[in-house]
Amino acid sequence: MAAGPTTAEQSGTGKRPAPSDRQPRPEGARGRFRPTGLRLALIAVGVLLLAGGTVWALYGSTWFRVERVKTSGTEVLTPAQVEAVAAVPVGAPLVTVDTEAIEARLREKLPRIGSVDVFRSWPHGIGLKVTERKPVLLLEKRGSFTEVDSAAVPFATVTTPPRGVPRLVLDAAASPSLRRFDADRLLAEAVRVRSELPDAIAKDTRVVRLSSYDSVTLELTRDRTVFWGSAEHGPAKARVLTALMKATPKAGHFDVSAPSAPASSGS
Image (tube, rainbow, N blue to C red; front, side, top):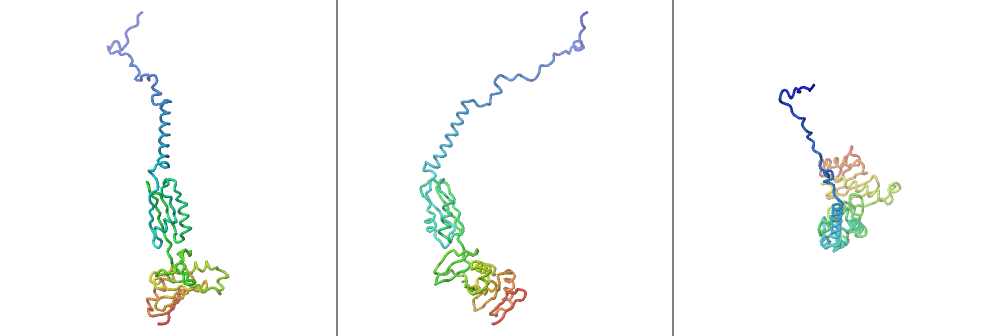
């Protein structure tokens, strides 16, 4: 017996199953974006040419060679002095300049330089940015003056003392302090006292006299003196001295060695 028509055929709406939406990938499509051996070779050649061109431009060409040196930040030193010691190889490829060696040479031969930054200024320059040490005290010996900076480092000797910098007189040769503290430590204590003075008082200070570790005296303008004592409690002593000078402006001697019990005398 023949099979009867299906329900779909009876309704007149019978359809064949739709073929899959997926289409077979053409042969070779998977490798479409894979570089071939020739392409890889061309890329390698391009990289080599670029690297070789860069090396030639930096080392072999005249495009990036030192043509000028510029110095900034000098005050006492002159740019010519700094550049003479720096000895930058003018005409050399900029990339070959040893900036660290130049920095070391400048610090060694010019101790007035506290720090220096040597940098390349493309395409043809070398920059020298100098920071000079600032003297805070002067050590006098046989008519010359050794400048001492805020780190208690003696860095230069001059015949004419810079204005506004007090002299340091060390009278501690026979002091028992030298048995416990060497001359460098005492120098550091004197610098510490100087650095903690209020600006107005520091401006009037002409001499810092150190007789021992705990005996520092300041000699000011108008024949005034301040017995500071040791370098301990510097900020408190500075505040007390400022107030004491305002309270007794005609006094000639001030004692702040014990800041909790200051005293002034003379007129």
